[in-house]
Length: 298
Length: 336
Image (cartoon, rainbow over all chains, first blue to last red; front, side, top):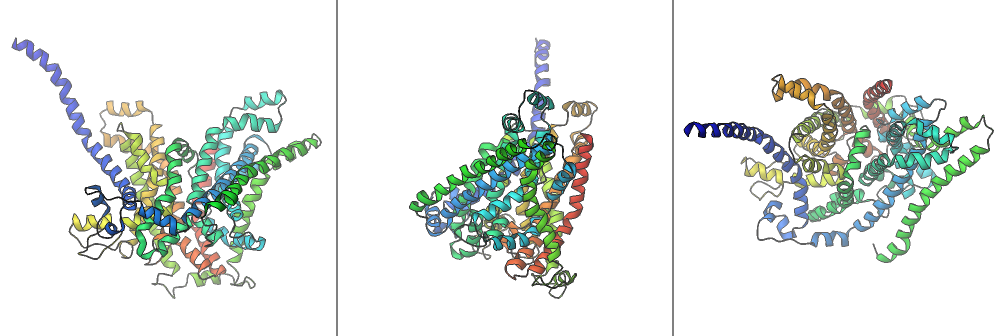
């Protein structure tokens, strides 16, 4: 009996002990990664909680005290900041800037990427190399001449100015990303289409674009978030004009001007983050793919 | 904003733009192709590519190449733009007369150097750590999502988030900022003025920026990590290599090319740092960086000549990275 029991018990012990050891061995791993993740989300969570706290609590205690009873949350900060600042107008302006500043460069880049990947012309490879070089050029070098040009043309402080500027600035990356994708498409596809008598336009609109939806989606999301989140280009070409200021500019101005009403800034910051967060969490896959495809955008 | 103008003026404008802009662009290419087809057979292949790359080259030329050259030229002329002054703007920008003060460009250069070193290294370290660790847990996807999230928001919002993290109350008063609550509560030390104290403020700003970019580094390294064949790691394990040895001898060397590419991107980001500094300190308390110094000279001092000179200094700083990128690109092309 005893021998038999030992025989039965032994294999179980052999099976369980290493598993427990394994669990214990990975415990530091789990603790480490959970600590890091929590540390990473604390700043955002802190801001989110703060934005729902009443004025009286804000300056006397930390946001974490709001997580234990008695709970006192309010929408006052959001109501106040939307009523007293230029934020709702800026929300619209951000769309007004970001949508065309995404559509124009994406389309123009698709045209150019098609030529770079499937047409032969003088200087093609050198021009492409120059575009890669331009990816690293700081935009600061371009501000003064472009600004003078905009002033001369009478378009400074208009949406048109930022659309055009963002198109120019976004193109090197956009062409780089799309050309790499277009080039990887199988050549037989084009040859058989040409034999069938399809023109350049048909090949582009009927074959290339439908096959490139994943790359185009990445680029659109990337460029949209880039423009939506941009502060510098908007500051330089729109000046401080409130009628055309996007969310980033208005938010940056609030940081300087609110003074005593700092708690309203929490709500303002969240309003500016809503659209990027929705885009990010719903289309994360494409966003990540865009980043992986060409990680030299600046 | 009142609802009336929103419905009657602004939304229609937005709609016209959303429909009109693509229509114009499609019209351009269709009309262009129509015209190219009228050309004699032998001219067509020579003209057609320029129809397709033309708009892109025009934009890049007008908004990047022409102004970059213009800025370089402008930096060699006086404030009014009429007289050639050689390198005098550079001398005035780089003069040591106001050196220890916050407005000196040398402070901006020093701080950019801090950014270059600490931002790049810390972002790579945290990104690598998170990529390697998250690869080993079953809840990898949500962890990566949360770490990556700051990439989606603007630097302006990021700066606001960290302003509250860094907020300071005098000793004795309840600390409402997370970091000072930890410093006083956990370590029983005096609260720190993170943004003003010149011993820590540059590193505080860099830490905020690292928080924002780590997700980017992690995602790229993680994708590269998944490309390492499992058999390779298994073979190393069978040979009795410990996890740390495997990381040092197998994983790290295989990740090196990706780390280099990400590193150069981070260097460019570090050199161009602007938004966080602009929003959090406006370059005061000795936290200025070149991009912000250039902006201040342009808008506050209205000195186009000196501002151009600072922009060119920034360009010169980027050139080694630019050359490195081109080399990488050609090496990759050669392997195609």
